[in-house]
Structures are given as structure tokens and as C-alpha cells.
Image (cartoon, rainbow, N blue to C red):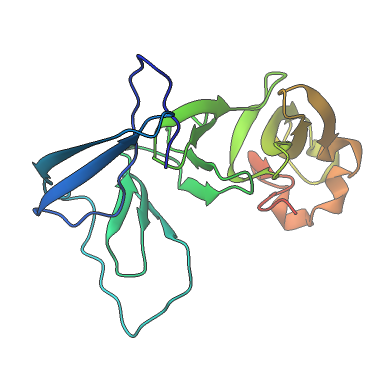
Length: 222
């Protein structure tokens, strides 16, 4: 059931339909005065794009919920029967990092330049973007949105450093991890920077000798 205002246009998701199938959808409109209007919409679904492989299942599982898949060309959600619920074509992404968040939304870093995480609603519509501030590049590994809407996002702090005194090169490109915490209204609450808490010599010697140094490799937020 969805509430609809008078003289308005509404859009409702119908998810998890089979491909190349005919459907008849019955719509019941219940007015405040108790009157009921019924209409039927007949339509046929198309096929899936070639970049989404056929998914099969083994055994039975009644666990509720969906499976999230990160394919090279975009995020895909399937249900327990292997049927695609929805997908978005986003080629050239950096691993996509497709995630279900605690507030009921989904995020996916489906852009090649890592400019931010695209936010999707339950129907798969893009409803916003979450990105690092302060000139940092958004890191593709992880993002956490709590049930209250607080957001924790990983960033990359890229610096050019002279590491010749500690076994490295003079113009090393050093990348460290930053975590930014935003309030539900997208105000920056806290910023944690690995450069403020660790020394470059905390890194093993063999890992700081080249022209590119991965100082801290942040993978997950808890």
C-alpha cells in the first residue's frame, strides 16, 4: 500500500519479475470516503543485458532478503530464486563496492574517477551522492550509513614525501587513509587521518622503498 495525494502522479516499484514474461498488474485505488477503483495494466518484460550472467540456485533457502552482486558493469540485486530484482548499468567502476546500508538505502561506487558513492533507494533509483570533502579522493573500499543516517566514508590523503632518509625515494607518492564522519544533515562531525597517528617508519622497510607507497590500506569501517 502506498499513500497518494490528490491530483498527483506516483511511481511504484514492482521488483523481481521474470524476464521475457507477460504480466497483468491489478491496481486498487482506495479513496478516503471508502470508494474503490480497480484498474489492470498488462505488460511484458524484456531480457537482461548480456553483461549480467545467468544465476542459478542449489537447494532451498527461506532466509528473507536479497543478494547484492558487484559486476564489472554495475550493481545487481537478486532474490533467493536467482531472479534479478534490479540492476544499474555503470561501466568502468572501481570494484563498485555495492552495499546495503542500515538505513534501507544502497550505495555503489560505480564511477571510474572515485568521485563518490552513488546512493540508491529500494527501487534502484539514484537519490544522491556521498563523497569526501576537503579535497580528498573518495576511497572505494567501504562506506557505512547507520540506521539514524550518520555516514562514515573512507578517503585517500595523497602526499608527495621525501623518504630518502628512511629507505625510500625523494619524491615518493604516499597514500594514507582518512575517515570522515557526517551527520544525517551531511555536516562533517569528525575527521580521522592516519598521518596524525602513525609514522612512515611504522611501515615495513620493503613497503616504503618504491615511488608509490601505500602507507595505510584501509579496507573496512566498523
